[in-house]
Image (cartoon, rainbow, N blue to C red; front, side, top):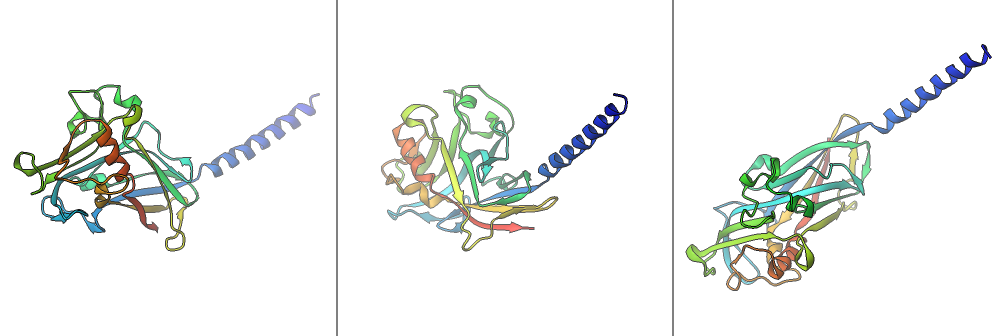
Length: 252
């Protein structure tokens, strides 16, 4: 027995060392950086100075453009905890990119939730990206604004020709939460190749022109302001869910 136990002990140590090595290999990570580029018809969005037109020839400018991103995953692998939320704000350049660790591998798709999940909507005012000071929380009614656009248009009948779209709603038929799934067009763009200690950057374009068209034909003259949940907000969310596409990937 005295000669067996040391042998078993050595065997256990070797086995554990092998397992530890396997675990360490599986935990090798690199950095994935996601950068959003907000555009209008493929041209860089310019707050306050850009003059744009929709498919109806209606003219408009944009002074604010914000939206929430959460639940990010690559090829079905969650890479950011559900508890993390990002507010992409065209008026804040630092908010257009964020980075996190990803297991070493090649990835061919990126997905995320556009908006804030129902649990957070009923949890009251919070901190970080969900802080009410970010001007994305309805104080009069529990709930977050998932996407926001403000601007002006000569076709608007609102005072000072304002255009305001504050899109929210997280329950029932008027739920505006969207799961955005983007496949990397491998015929023209290389896949995300995460390597240990290296950075890969995914560039995602959000073309605001999609806001006006898709499943619903939106006219400024008819609806220059939508600032509460409902069927119209849901229809607009169905439109803008199609504004995202992967336009480039850099494996540094």
